[in-house]
Amino acid sequence: MRTVLQSKRMVILLAAALFIFLSLSVAAAWTNATSQPRIEVLFSQYVTNGPFQLAVVKVRNHGRVAAVYQGYAKGTPLLDYRQRGDAREWQRRLVMCGTGLQEQVLLPGEELVAKTYVEAGKDWCAGLSYRKASVVDRVPAPLKFFGQWIPVKMNRETAWSAEVPSVPGE
Image 1 (cartoon, one colour):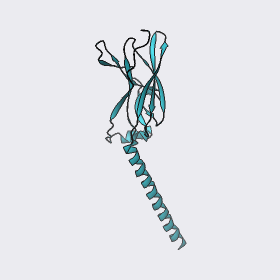
Image 2: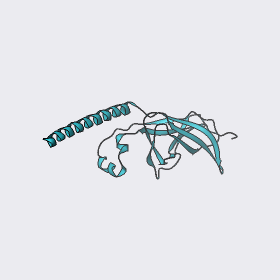
Image 3: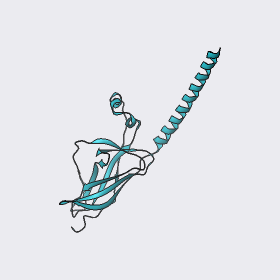
Image 4: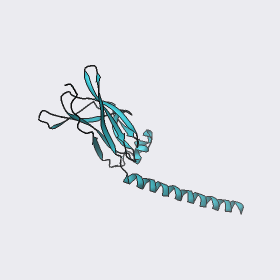
């Protein structure tokens, strides 16, 4: 009789724990589903590296959820870059090559500092292409192979800095 009573208590405790877990999971998923990353890209300063002019750009996630971006390492994002042409129209330019790119995660409140080459005499702005982190991003890399057939819609956005005047003294 005692084992039957203990079994019933165990079933009730497990059912309550499962209910609480599912309730918290649904609440967290709902909150995450309605939140978006809020990425800010700011020009900081110019620096020189030999004959090259580099712009130091700060990227910060002000949102409540993580953002996923392409980068060579955690602190080295692949920045989009556009500059004003001679006719003052915007021209896009590839900043670096794609070899070694991986998806990196920018957590809420986290900030990156990156450097990008800028062409003298041309106004420019830098941007970071990102998407909202999904449940798939939380799966360990070896297990992602098994879920690759699941279609996941991942919309990308680009956050741009304000237009920055050309390198001073040029």
